[in-house]
Image (cartoon, rainbow, N blue to C red; front, side, top):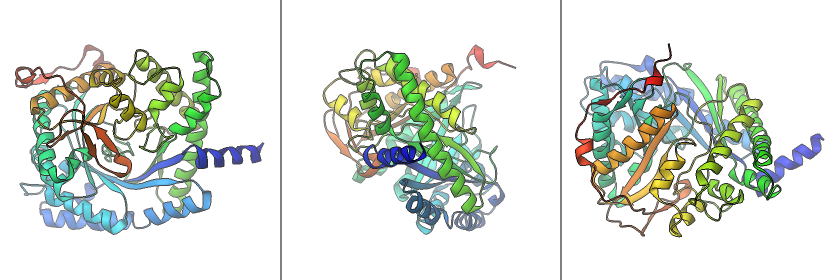
Length: 451
């Protein structure tokens, strides 16, 4: 039996693109706070490089010994608005550049945490950080930024929503020579979680340990292959099949996480069992949904299929690991999923359907390219819609949208690597400016009062 399981795992890795998507080390920077910005940045660099000195080397060693691909090694940190807020600096770009230097020194793929949490209002540090985002994203290579604009407990900060529409546009303009790449490193959340290992939204929450290891697993190809064996069977069977596969995937993630934790002397945190696709053939969430019987993702029935998938993944994962966290579900980033790209190109999938799908899956409108002339208020309204879905349904939602400079509907934006390429999608041309310009705060829903 043990030999059979070993051979099955080897096949899943070699043929079905099963992998550990990321080992993310979360590092608290609260002890790096200083009224002198330069001193704070020196403390940040010293602590992060000391803690993560062996992260990449350890990940590579585990990969070699166990034969399990570990695609990314990453770092997340305490939201920089909290750390830099004690300094007298007026612009926090230098803090982002320090994080970038850490990435270069340690060899990690990304550093997340150039972030602000403004769901109920701004501190001075939040304002400074948000204003710094376009320059920070344009002058760094490995740094990711996130802003939380809403939560079920507090409602939606519509002043922040409006501001982020403009920040996204400015970030695209600042990185126009890279087709707006800066926006691929910027995500706007509602109900952001503190232990998310996936970029661009990872940050190390203030309720976390000083240093911790979180693991993000993936394996859309494995799930699709399993569903091929139950073609035409009832949805009860589909759900059970996904649960069993999610169990196996999560077990592997827990094994790698605990091994890395022991070798690095850092506590093990959680396994995020999100199905995260890549542009590679055979690694698509869209193809899983189509395997359930849809001619194309985006047609009627897509939302129901995605709801089943998301739920079954969670059920299988929690049975396999006591500490499941992060986002844990199915991601639907357009540019990073070959099946999603094909569906957009054939006219089966549009923004409105994607928005509906975000009500039942992890995160939201992710890695979507829109025309470069899309107004800031329209982008803000997209953020507001997603935040509303998250706040009302008590789940995490987000927007990572790229208004591609100089691009129109039907053209393609090329990012390369795991970020893939994105067809520029049409947006509703009717204006939302008067709605967005109201400002203020959309109150928390009635079911937020649970105490």
